[in-house]
Amino acid sequence: MGPDSDLAELMANYQQGDSAAAAVLVRRLSPQLHRFFLMQYVSRTHADDLLQETWMRIHQARHTYRRSEPLLPWLYAIARHVRIDHYRKQHRTQSREERIDEGFDIAAASDAPGRTPDIESLLGALPESQREVLVMLKVSGMSLEEVARATSSSVGSVKQKAHRAYETLRKLYPAMAADAPKGEPA
Amino acid sequence: MNDPEIDRLLDRGAHAKPEPDSALLDRVTGAIGSSLSPVRPLAPAWMLSAALVLWCAAMALAGGFILKPHGVQHMDSVQRLAIFPLLGLLISLGSAVAASQMVPGSRRVMAPSTLALCACLLLAAVFGAVFPDHRLERFVPEGLKCLTAGLAQAIPAAAGMWWILRRGFAVDSLAAGFAQGALAGLAGVAMLELHCPNFELLHILVWHIAVLPVAGLLGMAVARWRSARQSA
Image (cartoon, rainbow over all chains, first blue to last red; front, side, top):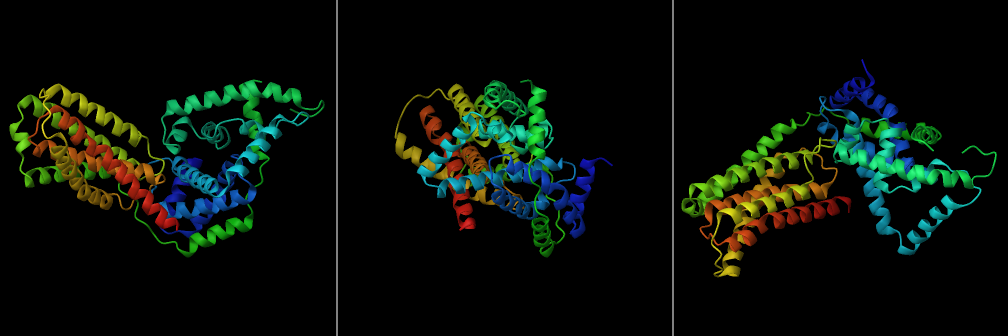
């Protein structure tokens, strides 16, 4: 039995009210969901909150999963909207000045000479939609079709976003690596 | 830097991220377990779409016949053959879009806004081709009557759609609201084509087609109001 069919089986048991299956799903899927949030400029505390909120929505929507369909797009469609809602709420509550300051800090951190280029500064250079697609494809290991389903877009649009993300990273990385102090790994 | 190096960097970055706390996972499991009961999986998407198509067709026919089908009686066969199959196609497509909006991770049919735009353009093209009457008499009063009748027809249509899709889960409630509103608007347009005997091109282009986007925007407004109420 493959990992996907295994997850589908667990999900079907969860729908039937099996608490052990629910617990196994939480243990198995939470690390990748948590990583998905953390890799999109979300703090650890917020990632914990988002993970908890995602599971509450999954629980609420569990009857909408159909065994004949892949599980990951269903799961990530919910997770990405939890993140989008969080982002909107944050935007509503944050003052304009704070946002400008934050934007400046990110840019300054990315361009600071002598700083080792890391995943945050690289992904920070990408627009949100490209970053999200890249994380789903490369970190969560989803296929193009699965990412298209999770993001409610077409496979062509996912390919284009991934292509543009790579293009930006290829252009950006040499400049950042050159800024890094000698001897530090790039 | 080449693509495999970027992949390696992403992989390294992802694995350097901290795992969620065990206590957090226990809390989540506990919260889920406390309200866990068996659930019946949602009906397949094709079944939801078919139910929506049937409902829209029934509403349009009922509305058209209650208000008297003067429009379809005065149409020639070319006009009938051009308009009603197109409306049927758009309602089928709209139903598939509205159903997919209520199931997370569904295969995308089309964005609701794209569908509404394409539907308006297609209807305008067909109406432009089959209605040659360019007169403009009592444009606003007659038009407002049709717009009101179309929107009034959309309300029960939308209520039935809400009932059909009530077990779904909209991850993007605004898009889902717009999709359902626009579909209800299409039922309103179909009713107007059955009923309205005014064949002036501009009347049909402006006031009949307007039912679709206006109903879509009303659907979105209702969805926004509902989600604001839920989060309050």
